[in-house]
Length: 325
Image (cartoon, rainbow, N blue to C red; front, side):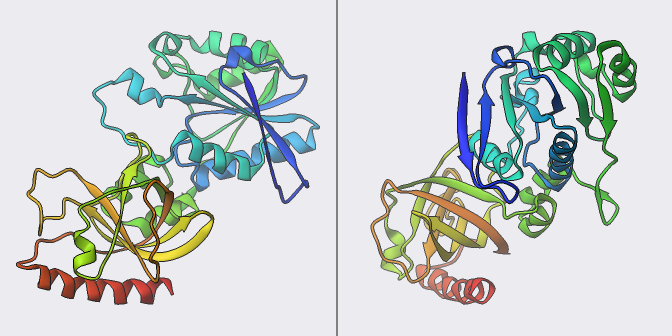
């Protein structure tokens, strides 16, 4: 099944991105320029590969193709893995659309597919199913059963099956290799600024506003309680953050608390996300809301009274406004 998504591009007035949800439904192209991988986060290293992919396609009069997978392979191969993702599938698609690839293939990843050998992957999928004439891969890329395939294998397969391969060197920031794992670790520490540096954009979290206990209203800090859009999405470290909030395409400033609300709840309470939006007083129940993390201001803490909590929230609001406004 193919879905056509139209969006603005700096190069062309409108581009239709063709999205296929199974590689075996994809119609082979006469001159495909391909890259493949999970691309979780679509961080600046990924962006370098994808922009180069598009440039090569333009220069060779080909069509750029990204083959990616859902669910994340680690969740399939190791079901006990607690890996959380930097993007929902919808967020990943949005980031890829901005870059301007021509074709996006989101293939279902399964244990059966994981047993595909490197030769089968190249011959049956890369060449016969996609029509690849140029393969662009990231540094130290591996593929096929047990990650047996490597750049050296691709250089051997290329002349046999009629495609060229190019490896993009490691992309560093201050000599630190960028990876999705490093970004996840930064977010787990509340370091949203390092995450932004590696991602090339603010880390985002979306959800639906649901009813809470309305305690914030009693102390002058009404909050919107947010239900998670995806259980697989990584939630940054508990604490208080300065955030930008998008509601119905309008942008606001606010402060977000992630945690168990220890002043009014016990430690067994589930993690909550609740945002106080500055200079805003509208009913948001049922509305979709998007948060952009700007700065971690402090850890979550337990106060002796609601008065002490309110005093700290006054300080937090002043700090957040100084950061955002």
